[in-house]
Image (cartoon, one colour):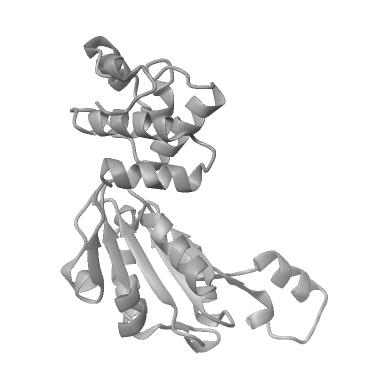
Length: 254
């Protein structure tokens, strides 16, 4: 993150779902006091979702009222996340989340945007960034990104944390959780991640699992599996194999 800010290059983060890639953008904004702007990518996203659109109902009312102001002015411009990142007063962290969900055409546009931090709006002209934003781009690797985009970014892979690191994350997020509960949950999650499951639990599920056990004053790992695993076949597999039975106690050394 320091190099991304110093070199003014976007930071591309890849890793399995749930390892905390999105949290990096949030933490960067919190640490620097910058305004966080998030663009959530999805299949079919286009410029109207990401850059700008026009407020057609207001334009129509304006036209019917017979006003003299041009229909295509900043008054009727709807700023989407990318344009807002260019025009926002003050420091900005732009979080472009799950870029791998977008199509090639949008990725090509994003490549141009990240190169110049300016866009052309036909009715208004060229808009240049008032303050160059810090950019964090995340990908779950559901498809390969183009080399041209990668070359313009610093790259970092985020893996699942170690048990000790994950326990410290749980304690930071849940200060009231006993150390034994945090250790037991993290040991269970580490064991689940070693199995061939459809959907492995992320750090968020670990925190939620500890929170659930705390709410149940200890609770049972197998009975609360639905907090960590979200696929029925995964839950059945873990229960039938008895993977967590030896972690039922309050310890966490296993």
